[in-house]
Picture 1 (cartoon, helix red, strand yellow):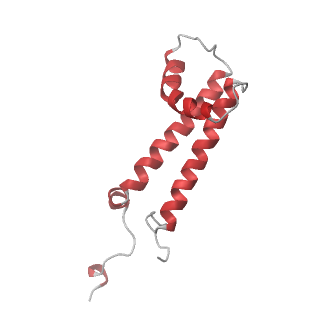
Picture 2 (cartoon, rainbow, N blue to C red):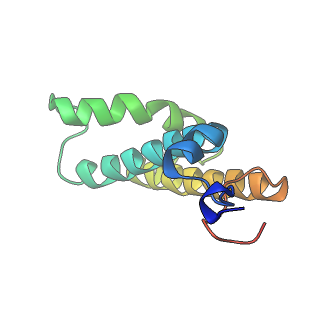
Picture 3 (tube, rainbow, N blue to C red):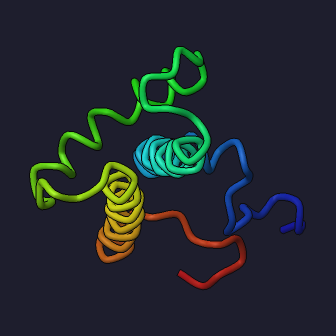
Length: 116
């Protein structure tokens, strides 16, 4: 049989995205939230909390649900910027835990060319 007729053991980029949508979609959403939270921390150092800046309002609107959840397990005396940093860290560990869980169940995508 010719080499071209054999099926490749690794997936291409487009088929990998389609085949592992259950990994890529939550990972992308968590990453976007995580880095938006980091952007809120950095922007919060330069902008007032009640600023009418549309970028600041967007960052606040997107990350407020995460901040509300993190505030439930964080002491009330914590400064807002530290609360946002805790949110960033919690989202990071959520991504790591999600990836590790999928690896345990052999559901996560593997690096191309790696043995299964």
